[in-house]
Structures are given as C-alpha cells and as structure tokens.
Image (cartoon, rainbow, N blue to C red; front, side, top):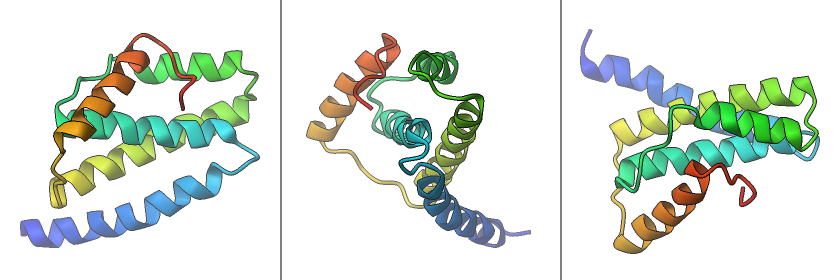
Length: 123
C-alpha cells in the first residue's frame, strides 16, 4: 500500500469528522462544543510549538464540565468529540501542515497556559 492510498481515506475521514463534531455540539450539548474547541486549540498548540498539553488535560476538562452540570450523555459526547476532532486535526496537519505566525503562536501559548492551569472557562 502506498502512502497516497492510505492518505486518501484518512482525508475523507477528516472531512466527515469535523462536520460531525459540529452536529453533536449544538445548543443541546455545549460540552461537546467546548470539547471541539479545546481539541482544536491543543492541536494548534502542538503544531505551533506553543506548549504541550498535560496528559490529564482531557480528564480535567471532563471534570470541569461535570462541575458545570453536564449530564453523563453530554460528558460521553464531549469525550468522543474531543478525540474525534483531535485525531482529525492531527491527520490534517500531517497531510497539509499549516504554518504558525508569531502572533498566532503567542495567542495559542497564552490560551494553553490557562488550559494547563485547569482554567477551561475561556472555551
């Protein structure tokens, strides 16, 4: 199997996964919307070399959503959305890398500092 034959299905998955995340993150599930935003931020942070997330970032996020009053179904959806968006962002960055400007790097670094401190209120 060539790299191109493997990359095409992954690209298709990415195209499908991102709209799927937005479908589950509507007003009925704000936790999934915040999870999608967090996954995109973490992926950009890694791509821009603006700070790595902690290993416990997802669990801490889920705990903060539970404290906000999210239902078990919303928490499960948020976890699934985070993983799906994170995987799609990683694949997309591998297929078509996006460069970071110094301004974007600084903005992402600032947001990630808050995330690493456990402050998810900005999402």
